[in-house]
Image (cartoon, rainbow, N blue to C red):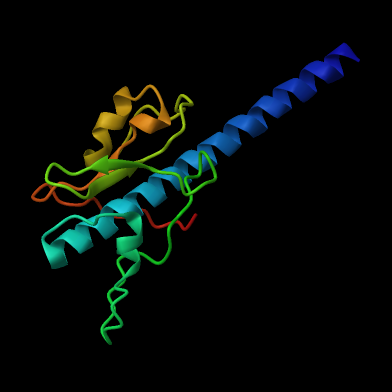
Length: 144
Protein backbone atom coordinates (compact mmCIF):
# COMPACT_ATOMS: atom_id res chain seq x y z
CA UNK A 1 0.00 0.00 0.00
CA UNK A 2 2.84 2.39 0.81
CA UNK A 3 4.46 1.66 -2.56
CA UNK A 4 1.20 2.34 -4.40
CA UNK A 5 0.81 5.60 -2.49
CA UNK A 6 4.34 6.69 -3.44
CA UNK A 7 3.75 5.84 -7.09
CA UNK A 8 0.47 7.78 -7.14
CA UNK A 9 2.16 10.79 -5.54
CA UNK A 10 4.95 10.69 -8.15
CA UNK A 11 2.41 10.41 -10.97
CA UNK A 12 0.49 13.37 -9.56
CA UNK A 13 3.65 15.48 -9.53
CA UNK A 14 4.37 14.61 -13.17
CA UNK A 15 0.83 15.59 -14.17
CA UNK A 16 1.06 18.88 -12.23
CA UNK A 17 4.42 19.76 -13.80
CA UNK A 18 3.18 18.91 -17.29
CA UNK A 19 0.09 21.08 -16.81
CA UNK A 20 2.23 24.00 -15.61
CA UNK A 21 4.55 23.66 -18.63
CA UNK A 22 1.50 23.73 -20.91
CA UNK A 23 0.25 26.90 -19.20
CA UNK A 24 3.74 28.44 -19.61
CA UNK A 25 3.66 27.73 -23.35
CA UNK A 26 0.19 29.30 -23.55
CA UNK A 27 1.40 32.33 -21.57
CA UNK A 28 4.26 32.83 -24.02
CA UNK A 29 1.89 32.56 -26.99
CA UNK A 30 -0.67 34.97 -25.53
CA UNK A 31 2.03 37.41 -24.38
CA UNK A 32 3.60 37.44 -27.84
CA UNK A 33 0.14 37.94 -29.37
CA UNK A 34 -0.48 40.99 -27.15
CA UNK A 35 3.00 42.35 -27.90
CA UNK A 36 2.42 42.00 -31.66
CA UNK A 37 -1.04 43.62 -31.39
CA UNK A 38 0.40 46.59 -29.47
CA UNK A 39 3.13 46.86 -32.13
CA UNK A 40 0.56 46.94 -34.95
CA UNK A 41 -1.52 49.52 -33.04
CA UNK A 42 1.54 51.70 -32.52
CA UNK A 43 2.59 51.31 -36.17
CA UNK A 44 -0.73 52.59 -37.48
CA UNK A 45 -1.43 55.29 -34.88
CA UNK A 46 2.01 56.24 -33.53
CA UNK A 47 0.66 56.04 -30.02
CA UNK A 48 0.13 53.28 -27.50
CA UNK A 49 -3.37 51.95 -26.76
CA UNK A 50 -5.02 53.33 -23.64
CA UNK A 51 -6.54 49.95 -22.78
CA UNK A 52 -6.58 46.37 -24.04
CA UNK A 53 -10.06 47.04 -25.43
CA UNK A 54 -8.50 49.50 -27.90
CA UNK A 55 -6.82 46.50 -29.55
CA UNK A 56 -10.22 45.03 -30.46
CA UNK A 57 -10.87 47.72 -33.08
CA UNK A 58 -12.59 51.01 -33.62
CA UNK A 59 -15.98 51.72 -32.09
CA UNK A 60 -16.69 54.80 -34.21
CA UNK A 61 -18.76 52.93 -36.80
CA UNK A 62 -16.29 53.54 -39.60
CA UNK A 63 -16.57 51.07 -42.49
CA UNK A 64 -12.88 50.18 -42.27
CA UNK A 65 -12.68 48.75 -38.79
CA UNK A 66 -9.16 47.78 -37.77
CA UNK A 67 -8.76 44.91 -35.33
CA UNK A 68 -5.34 44.40 -33.81
CA UNK A 69 -6.33 41.31 -31.84
CA UNK A 70 -9.22 38.85 -32.18
CA UNK A 71 -10.21 38.79 -28.52
CA UNK A 72 -8.96 39.66 -25.07
CA UNK A 73 -7.12 36.52 -24.04
CA UNK A 74 -7.11 35.11 -20.54
CA UNK A 75 -3.92 34.87 -18.54
CA UNK A 76 -3.28 31.10 -18.55
CA UNK A 77 -1.78 31.29 -15.07
CA UNK A 78 -4.80 32.94 -13.42
CA UNK A 79 -7.46 31.92 -15.98
CA UNK A 80 -8.77 35.50 -15.96
CA UNK A 81 -8.43 38.57 -18.20
CA UNK A 82 -6.68 40.32 -15.32
CA UNK A 83 -3.37 41.31 -16.84
CA UNK A 84 -0.95 43.70 -15.19
CA UNK A 85 -0.69 46.51 -17.72
CA UNK A 86 2.83 47.85 -18.30
CA UNK A 87 2.53 51.64 -18.67
CA UNK A 88 4.22 53.39 -21.59
CA UNK A 89 6.48 56.36 -20.77
CA UNK A 90 4.16 58.92 -22.40
CA UNK A 91 0.84 57.30 -21.52
CA UNK A 92 -1.02 54.24 -22.67
CA UNK A 93 0.09 50.65 -22.26
CA UNK A 94 3.20 49.15 -23.83
CA UNK A 95 2.72 45.59 -22.64
CA UNK A 96 1.16 43.03 -20.35
CA UNK A 97 2.34 40.75 -17.56
CA UNK A 98 0.69 37.99 -15.58
CA UNK A 99 -0.60 38.55 -12.04
CA UNK A 100 0.73 35.14 -11.04
CA UNK A 101 3.39 35.00 -8.34
CA UNK A 102 4.24 31.34 -9.06
CA UNK A 103 7.82 30.49 -9.89
CA UNK A 104 8.37 29.59 -13.57
CA UNK A 105 9.63 26.17 -14.55
CA UNK A 106 11.17 27.49 -17.78
CA UNK A 107 14.34 29.43 -17.01
CA UNK A 108 16.23 29.38 -20.31
CA UNK A 109 16.11 29.04 -24.10
CA UNK A 110 13.90 32.11 -24.55
CA UNK A 111 13.61 34.10 -27.76
CA UNK A 112 15.85 37.16 -28.01
CA UNK A 113 13.10 39.62 -27.00
CA UNK A 114 12.35 37.48 -23.94
CA UNK A 115 15.92 36.99 -22.64
CA UNK A 116 15.10 38.97 -19.47
CA UNK A 117 12.68 36.18 -18.52
CA UNK A 118 15.68 34.01 -17.60
CA UNK A 119 16.10 36.05 -14.38
CA UNK A 120 12.39 35.98 -13.48
CA UNK A 121 11.36 34.90 -9.99
CA UNK A 122 7.65 34.77 -10.90
CA UNK A 123 5.44 34.78 -13.99
CA UNK A 124 4.66 38.40 -13.19
CA UNK A 125 8.26 39.20 -14.16
CA UNK A 126 7.55 38.01 -17.72
CA UNK A 127 6.65 41.40 -19.20
CA UNK A 128 5.59 41.24 -22.85
CA UNK A 129 6.33 44.79 -23.93
CA UNK A 130 6.68 46.57 -27.25
CA UNK A 131 9.29 49.30 -27.62
CA UNK A 132 9.46 51.04 -31.01
CA UNK A 133 12.70 50.35 -32.83
CA UNK A 134 13.44 47.07 -31.04
CA UNK A 135 11.29 44.97 -33.35
CA UNK A 136 8.80 42.27 -32.53
CA UNK A 137 9.82 38.60 -32.32
CA UNK A 138 7.96 36.13 -34.51
CA UNK A 139 4.81 34.71 -32.96
CA UNK A 140 4.76 31.11 -31.92
CA UNK A 141 2.85 28.80 -34.25
CA UNK A 142 0.78 26.71 -31.83
CA UNK A 143 -2.65 27.97 -30.84
CA UNK A 144 -3.44 27.86 -27.11
